[in-house]
Image (cartoon, rainbow, N blue to C red):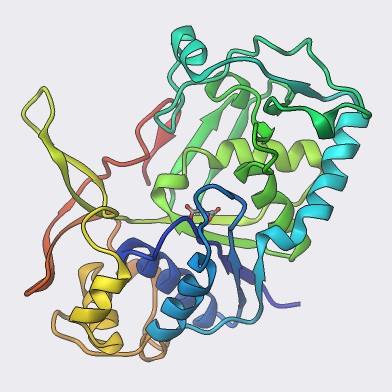
Amino acid sequence: MSACGRFAPSTTGRAHPGTLLAALLCWLDARSSGARVLLRLEDLDRERTKPGHVEAMERDLDWFGLDWDGRSRQSENRERHEEILERLVREGRVYACDCSRTRIRMAGRRAPDGGFAYPGTCRSQVVSPDRWRGCERPLRLRIESREIEWSDENGSTLSGDPVRLFGDPILRRRDGAIAYHLATVLDDAAAGVDRVVRGRDLMPVTILQIALQQDLGLARPAYRHHCLFLEKAEAGSDADGQTKLSKLHGAVDVAALRERYEAEALCGALASFVGLVPAGTVCRPRDLIADFDWSRVSKEDVVLAWDARDGLRRERACEGEAGAGGAGIRRG
Ligand code: GLU
């Protein structure tokens, strides 16, 4: 059986340059090595996934020139997700959580993803098999303390105890939606995904996903986390006078990109920003397969600027600021 990767965008809005970069790198990783690659549209956030978002994401990826060995919507897997949740409830491992965000923040333990670690306050409120479906509070899984040592194919390492770093993960949100970490590890395992290629901003939470895989008896895929496109944040600079950077989300979405670029010009521009081709190259994703090699992809995040007339401009590379700061994480 050949290796299998997946691209799993959240469908909470239109694609942006970072979405297309992540899709391109994940797709090239698979296509250049003979692996299969699946598109999984992560549409579980009912509030933020508006009508038409899923279709727009698919259309934009088609337009960009990517093809897939299978396509699915995560919401199609609801029954399977709930079966596993039911099993965990029956095992007495799931509890209802009453803590507000403010309360968790007040406990004061920073998590590696920039949020706050959950201190385990509600652990005793185990839910029973006849009550969990009607429960209007978030459901959390009690996970055990243990040291996880792990490194990705980029050589970045992350180690620590998931309970200390993050606390027990939410499995089902207050609104009844299955939470990202659970859905992701279940769907990767069910589809036979053994390679996860995704942006470096998700690297810190990988340790939590590995803990879930261990506790649910699922295989661990190989991971690779790649560089991000960043932009100057609107807030300007922080207290040290450093320019603040954030993921390139706000400035431009693919609707604006499609007004400015033909697909081939955009593909060439994005590939050139991360070092895959010289600036000015015009190409389709498939033209990049033959020469693709991860050693040619920038290890550093790339700061871009956008204006509607000139398009995207590469300003500079920068040693990772978004995502990988935190306990136990070392960049490779
Ligand atoms: N849906 C997630 C996102 O778009 C990514 C999921 C993943 O790659 O694990 O940020």
